Amino acid sequence: MQNNMRTMNEPLSEVSSMRPSRRPSSIHRRKSSIAGHKVLYIPFRERLFIILAAVIQVIILALLIASATTDVFEVDGTRAIESGANLTHVTTALGVTVTAGSKPFCYSLWGARHCGKTEFHTEKWYAARGAAHKGFPSPVSQTMMLGAAAFAVLAACYSFLNLCGIVVVVFLQDYTAVLCAWSFSVWITILISWALSVGVYARGMTTMPSSTIPGRLVHVKDYCRFTTSFGLTMACFALHAFQFAFTVVYERMFAKRMRALVKEQKQLTAEVHDQAEE
Image 1 (tube, rainbow, N blue to C red):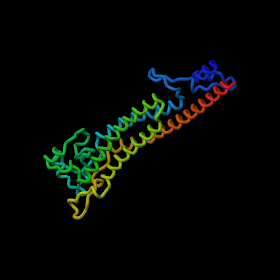
Image 2: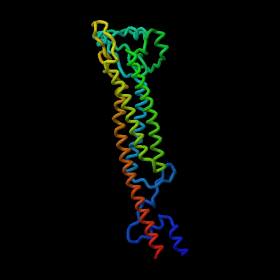
Image 3: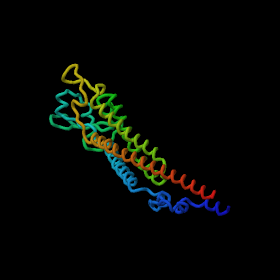
Image 4: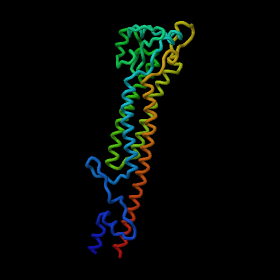
């Protein structure tokens, strides 16, 4: 009886060696080492996909930070004159002049500024120089751009947390479904930030009256073109589609491995029970 009890208390890795009829599985016996930390064995394909997901996430984080600090729209002097866009209050505040062929200033997520410079000014700074709405053409456009800025910052924070989540999931060998859900939330946040900036560019609620054609409303797209930040955000959105796909593939492979582990544990328990009865 005591021998039977000792058999039932043996580790699964040792019990598995008692099965001469079939090859012992490596699920219980092998271990992976990550920074000196021993975890359940992670097959090569799982390691490949989670490493790809982590590398892409690092790239996305860098691009998101860059997109939040660079220009979104660039003013075309020729198109501004032709469309009759009234930019006097902005040009006065920034000390620039709108001429044919010029690029007098740009719009970032945080307000109008000189193109290519990382300038961030407060609402009071613009108001003191006679520019309302931080240089944006209307209150609606200001609200939408600041919303895009908020979601851009949120996406960068979520991206960093997602990167930390990858490390935690690999070390704990758990919570893979949560990681997939979080990765999807990052993707949606990037999309919202991009959509808000596109809305400022195209929608009619962000217009201003034309100074040359009575009754005409000038859209942002009539005198601006997209520039660096927009392209970086689009790149982030596309890259995160791959990151999310790699995360989902890793989660599916991990779940399959865990099901195999549970199945084998049940088989080993049944074998031990049968041997104990004998």
